[in-house]
Image 1 (tube, one colour):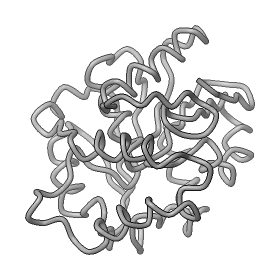
Image 2 (cartoon, one colour):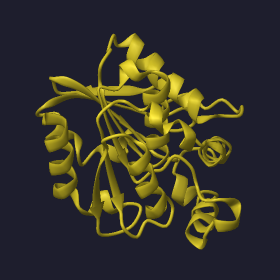
Image 3 (cartoon, one colour):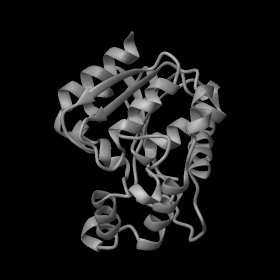
Image 4 (cartoon, helix red, strand yellow):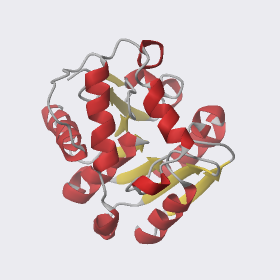
Amino acid sequence: MFYEIYGAGHPLVLIAGLNGEHTMFRMFIPELAKKYRVIVFDNRGVGQTDKPDIPYSISMMADDTVGLLDALEITDPYVLGVSMGGKIAMDVAIRYPHLAAKLILVSTGPKIASAKKINFSRRMMYFLLKLPLTRGSNPYYSVARQRDASAAYNCERQLYKITAPTLIIHGLRDKLALYTIAKEMRAAIKDSQMITLQGGHLSFLYHTQIFLSAVTQFLDA
């Protein structure tokens, strides 16, 4: 399992989304590392981490994350997850509550829409993942394993178990993780906060300063 650590301070774990590697966070790391000990890594199936050709699950990738934290002797990190990484972060917070001092969920939800509601944007994403230009050096089989794990996950009925202070950051026009589901998630996680960005699934990449300000204010509160 490949990982990198930057900075010092309270540990902050950043979990990437589908086909995303630790480099997803490269534009945020310099600023965050001024205040926190930032841990980034590649999930199973992508980057420099192993890519076994077996069925993956979100809980399996959450266990990978917990195993890394155990190896680094980190016990109370802040946890931030984007898209599929948000599902991994939720699973950590649900099953290992002592390993999530605070939780930030970005462009994610506890489930995807029902099969009948899979929209054009999601179908297009699935198609683009078949193209080497889109997925980079990651083999299709392992990216497909991640895709299937993310699509199968549903922790909607377990959100009440999340006790960590939680911030939700979501794009108003997100067509992959629907905004309506994000609002339902906010209602289900006790005392959670929500910030809406103008834009879609990757809106946090286009509103960098708003995103960083929201993250640091929440973590420092």
